[in-house]
Length: 395
Ligand SMILES: Nc1ncnc2c1ncn2[C@@H]1O[C@H](COP(=O)(O)OP(=O)(O)OP(=O)(O)O)[C@@H](O)[C@H]1O
Ligand SMILES: [Mg+2]
Image 1 (tube, helix red, strand yellow):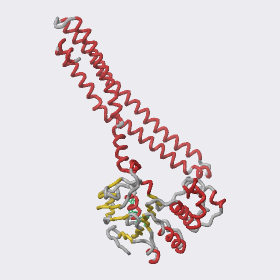
Image 2 (cartoon, protein in one colour; image 1 turned 45 degrees about the horizontal axis):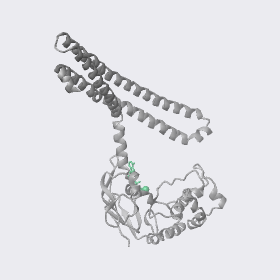
Image 3 (cartoon, protein in one colour; image 1 turned 120 degrees about the horizontal axis):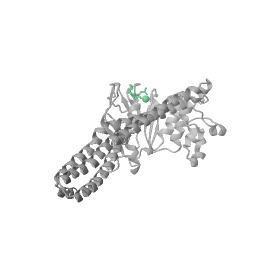
Image 4 (cartoon, protein in one colour; image 1 turned 60 degrees about the vertical axis):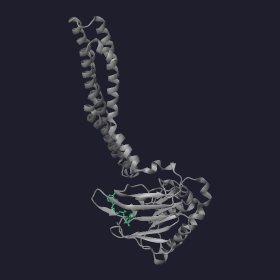
């Protein structure tokens, strides 16, 4: 097309190229404006959802104090901000189209104008004006679509980068492709730094399939963080966590095959039975047996009763027993337990430890204050010092 235009008159080509260049470059200048507008919408959207989540949970409390209007007000403020950011984004898109449109109109007018001048100077024939207008129209039509699409693409470039980083930070999102063949978990030079400049350095740890490990250390030395690091819930600041299979190949494990009891137990607002079976009905007939194992004496009626998150009828220890029953009823091949018996008496703890010790699963359990006899129910103990730098083996 440019070649045909060139045969008509080189000046037409250079003018077309110059205006096309300006038109193509405009998205680069408008990029920051578009990104900011999209980020503002994303930020406002996130705040809006957070507001609903935070205030929604406390709705009952607000109702108790006849303060429902507070909820309407905060939701209104948050949704107004979201609306403002949407309007602002539309304004930025309209502005980008306007600027792009100026370049487009200039191109469509100037090229035929130059062709006209050349015709009057007798440098080109009349047919060339028509041909030039026709070509120029085609070129600028394509450029118009191209530039507007680039503007739209640019506007979300920051968000796309964040989404890519997120999927890299949480490899388990992709992990289901790999079967569960973990033979060894190995950590190397693991360091976790926090924004408040505190830092935890870990010794290199090997956990072999089938081992039952007790993880101890003073409060705050980084035990819970360690479990979250090997579970991929948190990303190491330095070093790495590797899972190996039978062939000593590094694999991305199926994290769904790892049972995890976090330090703060959460129960779902459903029946105690559902909280144990995790809605897997074929396990229902094993519920009373497993409750006996964890020493939780409940009637069938109580097992079927719905747990209210605000319910004070369940003690801390009872909640822990429900969660332990969840892990025991259908044990996963790896089970990580973060102080699962901290609110349970010593005698029952011994009973539960015995059941755990008989599981064929690989176990890592964090616990404080176990008796020497209870400690012996594990294959070995890993002890983190204050700086997380030494390891003891009690086998
Ligand atoms: N998100 C975070 N931001 C800042 N610091 C953090 C964060 N998470 C953990 N830490 C710090 O890391 C340290 C270790 O925390 P972690 O919960 O792993 O300790 P722990 O050994 O499990 O303690 P405990 O026995 O009391 O449960 C703490 O001193 C805490 O201040
Ligand atoms: Mg902890």
